Amino acid sequence: MTRDSGISAVLMREHLMRIVDISRSGCLIESRQRMEVGAVGRLRLRLGHEECSDDVEVVRCDAVAMGQPVYHIGVRFLWTTPRQVGTIREAVTRHVEHVNATRTAWLM
Image (cartoon, rainbow, N blue to C red; front, side):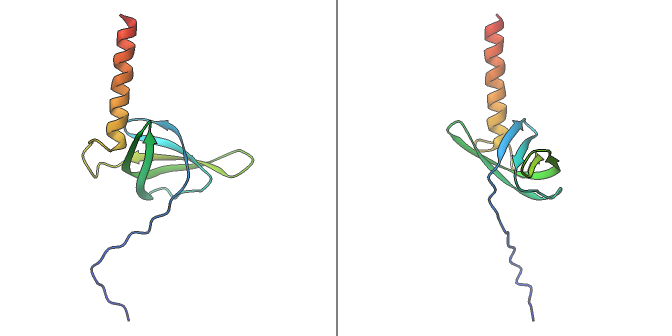
């Protein structure tokens, strides 16, 4: 007999992945493991010396024609928390603003 204790649980798995592309709204990840579209999780990564994380949702998963099974996984950032220091969204925004300021200075 089971009883609903009212306690929620989360099963987490860590996957080694490579970031192919990243923007303010999401990123493209390369992995040897397939992920289900609609899966939700927390993405943690290091940008320079800074560790960042954000909640994400898988929006696509495509097999890439290579020797071994490799998948390109598109994820979008979920707005479960405000964009703040420590989030990927904030770090990417700050980086883009820095690059744009550098380009503007270079063009002058």
